[in-house]
Length: 490
Image: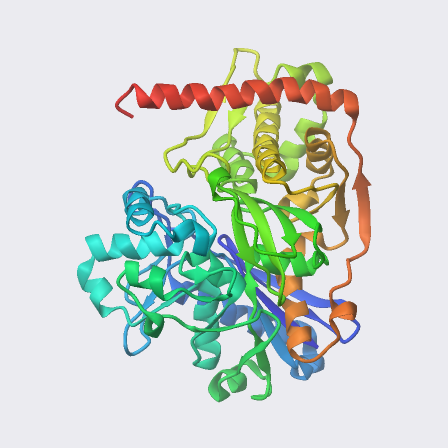
């Protein structure tokens, strides 16, 4: 028995698989985000731990006598978040999350003071990354910065609470801008530019390696053996890759969660920062990956449902009833509710409906949301292709994978097959459980197989051509919005 824990932005999810890699039980606990000021996005690390503690009690009840047979635990987590600990291991302030955009000024500062940044870290300085967050804390909360003994990433805070050890892995650490991504080690040069050193960083292990064992008191409270090991784990998307068997160069998938990601495995470090493409370490040794990342994906659909007083299920049913003509005359939607990364690197980008009339239907607006997010994924595919990366098909994971309509829309827009898998919505939790298997010594070829295909969605060429006309309008709309913002006081 193996346990995977996925610390997301909207929930913590945990999943148990047996020795035959079948899912035995799964459960989730919701999380909330605090936005005390414009551009801010924060969470309480204590809330993460309480949610995890609750899940362990729930899964123990679901699994019954099999619970005590768990041999190892894997971790997956939202990337880039800054958890600041003092010398006693106490949290200094709420965690600053990946979709927090307050530190645009510090990004410009880091680009200026660290000209070697792109070569070493493989990425542009963006507000979501961890390093500029610490520069912001140093500038605006100097007392908190001076008290900071250790900076941990979100999932690594859970590990610290579980084991008492401060450890991270290379895939998650690559999202800090402090890692030498080619060497898979901390960069003393980049740390120094932020007023930090290795002493402020956790130890690094590969995602599939053993990082620590459960602390005796935690093991006793959870009803597990104190010999249970905890795998290195990884950033949510790299771990989701393990869940869908994306472990060979060229394997690719789309994740439709709070954020939207197009992920492709590479056999070497291939940075392309000029297009805001991310180049990170994979959770397996000697593998890397590229990603295009949009900050708002399925969260756009959740936002629109809250706004219009409906549910995702009901709205999707309405959307599916639209005629081709009604979809062709739907408004356009820019999905930049939290700014945007790839390809724009624009923390000030904003969401927008364009083309509304008195006859616009709620279903048409809902369709525009799905289409706008999908166009954002197409933006990512375009810049990945321009960087020399070839993608021939994509798996689809995350909450958005539950919608057949959205899967078909993506296939039509991207002009490539989109594959959904049974249990694809489990994503990071399943990948984390698979990393737990690897840390316990199970063979990689057996553990990291591709899950059973639920359906392959083929692109409709005629529909693709029609959608590309709307995509041109979508791209022009963003450029017009930049012009407007440049010449206004917004």
